[in-house]
Image (cartoon, rainbow, N blue to C red; front, side):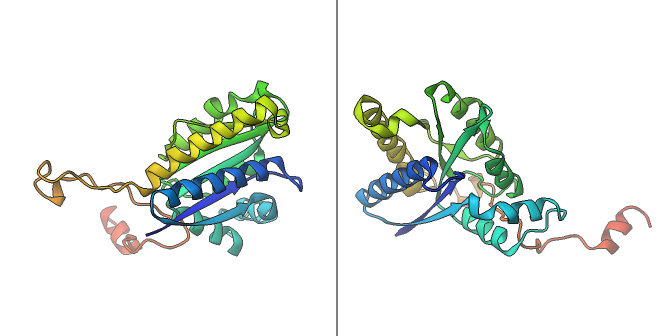
Length: 224
């Protein structure tokens, strides 16, 4: 079975340490999923390339551009997500937050997610738990226990680099285990499928719901 992993990276420069960390995570997750006997397809969303589209979407009453639509479809249909942002002013970047703001609030229901961040100094590492983890918890994603933070010194090898490799491997293993896990119940513990609580479905926000109530019905309910 093939799994799809989507990577969201909010780095602004080229080359980007944020993109570098995202690629390391994607490679590690791919290896972990393959080790579990399944193939994996990775899609990368470079938010830097969507900056103008995100601004247009937000200033047009939420009407998404074609590129934003495609990005929302990619995220919603993924089996797992890797989200990496640089730290700006002690939190995730504004570009990263813009993208999260144009996602439907049901876009990543129950989706396994690895959160990661980069910064110039290790003093910002708490951004994972005071900013990123609450954001994805609000969106009802399943954030893996290990978050990955990388300061500039972590990319230079030595002791710091070894620590980063360990964190990347641990987070990748946790994400892969969730991505390939099967949902359902143990035989004999649930009498029927109807007794199981259905997971909240995901919505990209791009299409119109088929069960939209028409105006005539709405007015009738109001006695008009």
